Amino acid sequence: MMTPQVITPQQMQQILQQQVLSPQQLQVLLQQQQALMLQQQLQEFYKKQQEQLQLQLLQQHAGKQPKEQQQVATQQLAFQQQLLQMQQLQQQHLLSLQRQGLLTIQPGQPALPLQPLAQGMIPTELQQLWKEVTSAHTTEETTGNNHSSLDLTTTCVSSSAPSKTSLIMNPHASTNGQLSVHTPKRESLSHEEHPHSHPLYGHGVCKWPGCEAVCEDFQSFLKHLNSEHALDDRSTAQCRVQMQVVQQLELQLAKDKERLQAMMTHLHVKSTEPKTAPQPLNLVSSVTLSKSASEASPQSLPHTPTTPTAPITPVTQGPSVITTTSMHTVGPIRRRYSDKYNVPISSADIAQNQEFYKNAEVRPPFTYASLIRQAILESPEKQLTLNEIYNWFTRMFAYFRRNAATWKNAVRHNLSLHKCFVRVENVKGAVWTVDEVEFQKRRPQKISGNPSLIKNMQTSHAYCTPLNAALQASMAENSIPLYTTASMGNPTLGNLASAIREELNGAMEHTNSNESDSSPGRSPMQAVHPVHVKEEPLDPEEAEGPLSLVTTANHSPDFDHDRDYEDEPVHEDVE
DNA sequence: TCGACGCTAAACAAGT
DNA sequence: CACTTGTTTAGCGTCG
Image 1 (cartoon, helix red, strand yellow):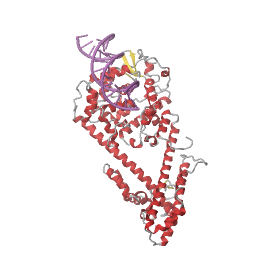
Image 2: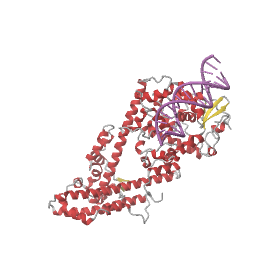
Image 3: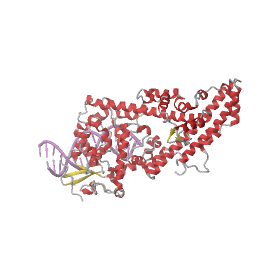
Image 4: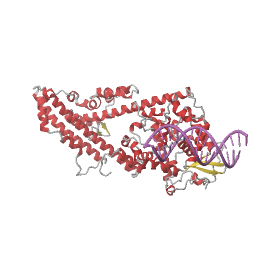
């Protein structure tokens, strides 16, 4: 961690899951990783550019036209300068990274960024080539620079490769017109309208990449711009770098937008359809509810939209972009996914999607255990009677308003079977609580202890934007794979993420305040002592783990009103 | 192939 | 007796 290296996603996962780092450290780590990635990208770009230049030189080697000798000379010089400037640029970038504390470069550390320039680029050789070639040098490099120096700032970034970007954008621009807005014309217009809101000028500083020169006012900035960032080779090189950056970002954005669009389309169809198509495949066929309903019906029934948390892509399908949505066609996959990640649905998560589940007879992608746990944890006392659990199910999910015998049986079965559900004898009968120790105990083991599982997690998310480190830790803890930045674009995913964050915040507060919140010592486990404990002999490790209730602070007030505690007597006399 | 896991079905017991 | 609650077993499918 001291010596910055781009760590593998797996390593990142491990770090996150083992939680050996504090959130702050994680954040720093993430930023460092980003910086390093950027650095590597730059290097690659430089390499590419060099290769391109060489290629150009070679290609034009045959058809040399001894013309414009003067131009050749100047361009040759410019070329050399460009090399120098690129090196400078790299160093500047590195410096800025160092300045931000994102990168620490040891003195002895090999100068990463300078290598690509040095290798494969023998100046004399190139000069030779250049000499022979440059006459016909009408590459895009020059065509792209046919702007006034003042113009350059905007044209380079946004319009120097308009064909390319627009090509990328086209398919998506139509989906939501935001991208089409991003045209050079508009930008330059906006500059004219707001002359003092130059994108390269802000907070009295020139925002030219790697510059950061202080400019008292806008006029001095303009002067600086014209003098320091005139149309020269350095600016050109920098511009190209910026172009590359922008293109990559746009590409990424385009991908994400496409994904988002597909998801939204998918969800929209889903959320409206269910009502109009009541039980297309007769879910009521009493028996084999799950098989008929969740596996067969989806063909006509909307697939569960809840894929939100479905980051895994077990099904190899054509439209890779929408893998998460299409995987719902098969019930078992949903099941598998949900139980594997043991999705701890937070109140907020359900709240975000509650309308959908309430109205659409779509099977929620959560296991019974998860749902039961959620139901219990949502209750103020963190305990529910069986009937209350039933009510929660039917209230929250339209899907559970039919085939009661089946899923109720499943609920009872789960309650009895899973150690994490503890039956507690109460004044007015028995209530069910969640043994968080038990519940939390297993999942981390599952994940952290099983490398293959880690491997299976989507690897890219290790480089996601600096998410709240705590959030990531929470995700890891909850066995929820981290999401890529792309995935975060998904509204439902976002919901989940925010829900987790919310949950975590609550948990944090909970721990920080040392349970000194509204109900001190009101832990259900303390409130009533279980009279019935599942025969499971207590594992020695079971008692350990002060994390017990920490992650359960997901009680959402949003749902309090919704709960129908006919008679919530469980205001047990706790003290 | 095997074990773990979840879901469903069903039998059974005890209590209301 | 019917119903609810709770336990347990069995079979099946999926996944790693």
